[in-house]
Image 1 (cartoon, each protein chain N blue to C red):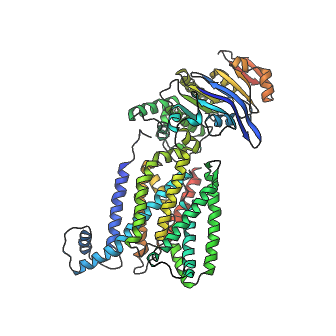
Image 2: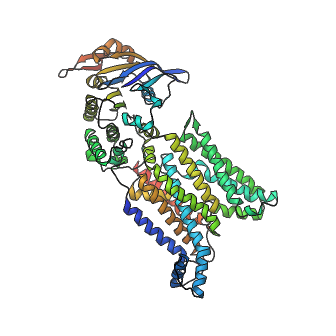
Image 3: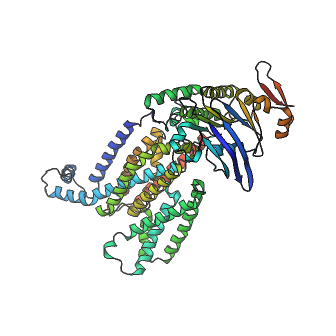
Length: 348
Length: 255
């Protein structure tokens, strides 16, 4: 849509909001610290030559080791979930679609459940992989189920998204049954980790856990906006997009792949965090309309903001205890979803 | 120039299209007529490449359709579908602007094409409206503006296919839309449209193609095709053909 430029003011606004939320996540927490100390510690972490007193050195340690990885993880996961939400709503041409539809979340859940319940039965694992096996299994599970959904949707060399949707429902149910079986077999320790994994948490973020999320998030932020025009015409209809010269099958495959990779990595790192992919694109559309040239970058920023704020809500009020962040997003997201449904009903 | 040779589509063992031959030369409007289930929409799908033919082929400017690269094809061939299923709140001018995506003609040329298309489809006054707030007929005209923008500037290598463009329109806009389509053909484009209204077809088309059970029953100028005996056979209804009292074209109505 060459004649109209993306809306810059909104992107600037969201970027400032992201910086603000990020700063809040660094300075607010259960360990009280003076704002001035936190500020000097952040300057120090940014590489500025500042002398640190004892309190400030402690602040630098807490921020650098605990809060910074956690905030980075929130931004990466939020951006990924929001952008893949946009991609799925484009693919299914439905504003209420969600990455969970193509089975990536249930697949990742199954992978995680298998890792938690079955892997310990295999005995000693290679020591280097110990911190990562859960994430790896979750990622592979998500990819496996999604590729099955994609294959089941193929008809005569084309992907039928309606069939994909139904295949996604069926495989999600199947994965749910398998998870139920694993739960039944699990011992108490495994049950507890399974439950917490399913609720999602940004806790215990360390830089090695953060970097795959940031790398994939950055790749999506750079890649998906190149498909903004294609997503726009896809909303008109698949035939219409073909008639406008777009390679629709290749684009659909790419969107599924991006979503499977993105959500796979995100869910593997933090567990299940629902509704972000649904709420964020919706809020952004209310502000700018559905044009993907603005929607994609704006959703990435807004997703980061939402998850940073949700994480603050999860860890500050009950400090030093914290709520699982998946619980917070679900508590905010489900009523929002119902509100959207009611609004749609009004309009029709 | 769009041609089909021996075009056959099998669907569940039935021949939805059976050896259809047709040619739409530049500057002409060909109207495809026929009863429900005659294969009109199937014909549009086959001509646009949405359905792969079981036998025969479709060629655009002499080159088989599947061999055209997507973008080069989209610069020449545009399609107005019977109805759209857009569920997102685009602005009207954003939708029309999508018609310019296959072209790299620059911002000012695009803006000019969009203005002209909005005016020709009589939707300039709706340009800032939310598409979802429009009526069915208004939506159809916005989609028409989109394909007109796609084919701008009209020339002899442009081809437009329309599937029942007037179905949702009031009488005024039926005439206005078909005038716009006719104008495109006068500027050199080849146009094929599926129509239900035989009198409108007689007024706006240079040639008519009567489709019956997937076969071409009759093709030619309106005077040759619109004979009450032929029509009554194909449509299974007694139809009268008279001359319009004021305009020089045929009118068809039930007896």
